[in-house]
Image 1 (cartoon, rainbow, N blue to C red):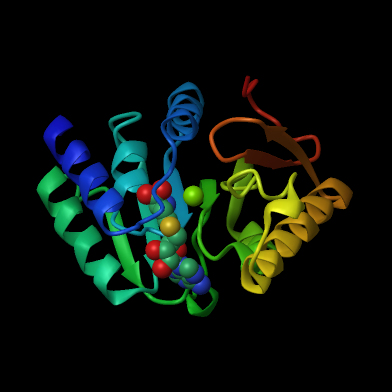
Image 2: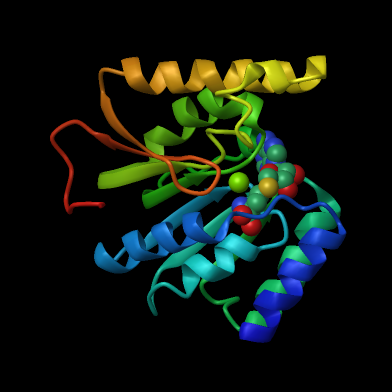
Length: 202
Ligand code: SAH
Ligand code: MG
């Protein structure tokens, strides 16, 4: 398993695949372990790096992970098969906004796909959250650019930064969910329904 993880890290750096930072995945794995998480939905598989690590946090959690890029999807399936976790990780090749998950509920929903669509993902997938579950979002700092907009050179990047800012505002003002923000890795948030927090996350 260690070799596969290193191999994936190498592939990601060679191919510019934005995999999760170490501190962030450690935080999520700890949450999965402490809360005996059974079901996870991940939006944005890339090559399966975070999915495989989350599946390693305990021996029983089951993960559905969605990826819309064909090359990355194929790479993820290959890695999941190599990891021997194919019974617990299902990789879905589709745009997350087109996927129908009717009847499914998840203890953890991990949002890690297109940064400009975070509000859309939250609105759609919060319907699939189990009682007591959490929605975790990655990359809220967007490499520090959210705090330092002066550093942003391109219009495209500024568009994403503005959308992340809107998402943070959306979470802060959401009446149904309480969100805690963590200065870990590239910035993480953990949202849970009011009055439903199960275990301390710190
Ligand atoms: N979670 C991964 C990294 C994901 S990178 C890890 O930490 O290992 C974000 C991925 O989301 C990219 O591979 C991108 O192709 C995918 N993506 C972006 N928008 C998407 C959408 N609407 N539906 C599904 N996947 C999407
Ligand atoms: Mg990320």
